[in-house]
Length: 259
Ligand SMILES: [Mg+2]
Image (tube, rainbow, N blue to C red; front, top):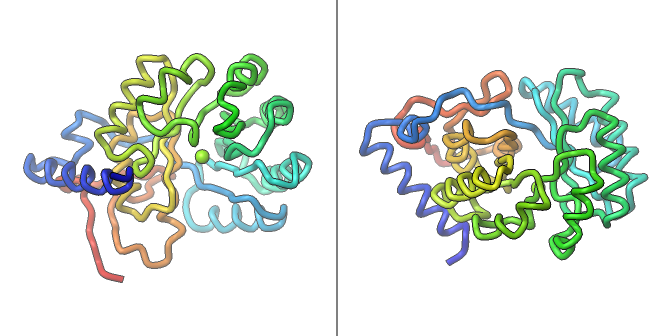
């Protein structure tokens, strides 16, 4: 069964469990709110498009963290031009991270890690392609930034082989197959001394709310996809001071309204 289908069943069961107990899932798990702020994402585009996207985000919500997508097929000079454009409109207090989505080779990844560290980036996600996992140890030795993996790490079973060569993992509900496996990944990562981030695909508020319940356990959060939707059929966790905060209703605290 595909991971997204397993995630659907698992998420519904966690919602039911919370409702049976009369507690929001975060409380049932003994967690405390609020979580850290979530980042908002700037996709690859021209420097002008990237600036416009950031300006739109700044108008939409209180932005405390920004994730910039790099790894342009046109090379790192194009990445640097786009990143510099973002920096020009970025408020100074905003936390900054970069996701290369596997777009760099090893020399470019080392160069970019140094270049981005000089510009205040906090961590670097998936700099190398999945096929280049064996080069992570060389990158890890040379890069001045924490290295997180996303596409290289689907479930808890992927963590032990990667752990020595990375600093953290990106957990996604639809990628790992549910909240139970997400918890298993968290505990496996903690055992290996790794940091944890939560990400998303093009989830509605349902998927991001589900992960928001676990989010006090994460060091970095990137749960912004539903904020891009015009007619999200779900409402749940809400943005408060830049953080995606679950409510106090039992279960996941979701409301559904047909679009
Ligand atoms: Mg990613």
